[in-house]
Amino acid sequence: MPDMKIRLDQLATISPITPHQEDAWQGWRDGDHLALTGTASTGKTFLAMYLALEEVMDKSTPFETLHIIRSVVPTREMGYLPGTIEEKLNAYTGPYRAAATELFNDPKAYDKLVHNNYITFESTSYIRGMTYDSGIILVDEMQNLNFH
Image (cartoon, rainbow, N blue to C red; front, top):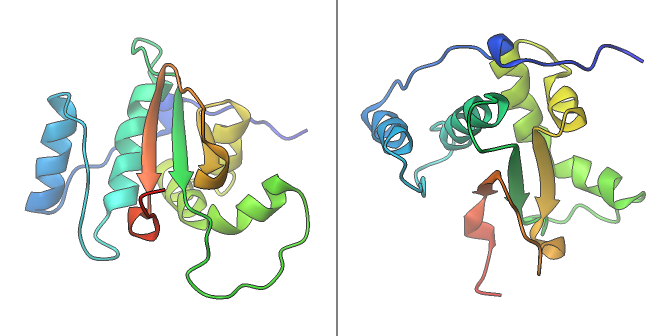
């Protein structure tokens, strides 16, 4: 089995590059709950993952896991996806895999984060009644959600 260890000191050091990213960064540092909005490709998910991973990988914080929650209702027809629930959800983890690869300069970083329980990925279809203790929750692609 390949080495599945991943450490906080392997996380790249980044800083905000726009005023809105700076506002989000400072809000997080001040302990605020955040709702990041903006156009596509402005760094919302990337920044949220970075800030959350800093916390969950730091053993001195009370946070243990980053729970990424996303609707897996396709915005365009994908057809039937065969396989297990995990295999079906893999079709939606691409943005998080890409961010983890860049944040750790390691193409296996996402799998390592999952293996070490730093990240879980869950569909809104399966979270009713769930309780998340000691975690940070990142609800992504909220524009695809409805009231239910």
